[in-house]
Length: 137
Figure 1 (cartoon, helix red, strand yellow):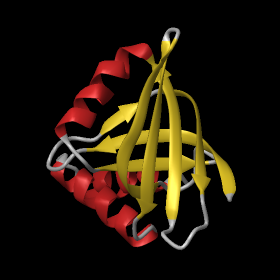
Figure 2: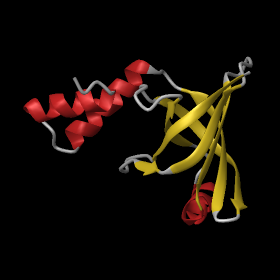
Figure 3: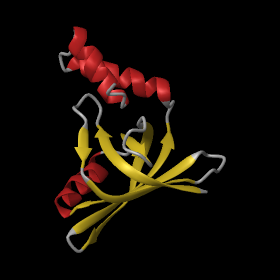
């Protein structure tokens, strides 16, 4: 198994705008098993507790985007299920079981589609795309 720091977590519901979550702490674990399973744990503000309870009741799977280790890394996309939602004082701990998706190409295509859907074009699209890839140069 390999463990990494979870830097960013985004929920990507089908046909809806992505939801960026402010995470207070988090880990992502590559179990390195035959099923290619990952565990993602995010500690978030308690205000998100009910959101995750609703998601658990409404859907089996969701897509999540995670930035691992450093903020300027390209996001990794996962098909995930919520395994557990727990209260921790004023925080909530969310545990996902996940399988990683086709990494780089899917991430780049998703970013481009999102920017076009948001109305970017021309030089603005080019700049937003570079920013989304983490290359602000």
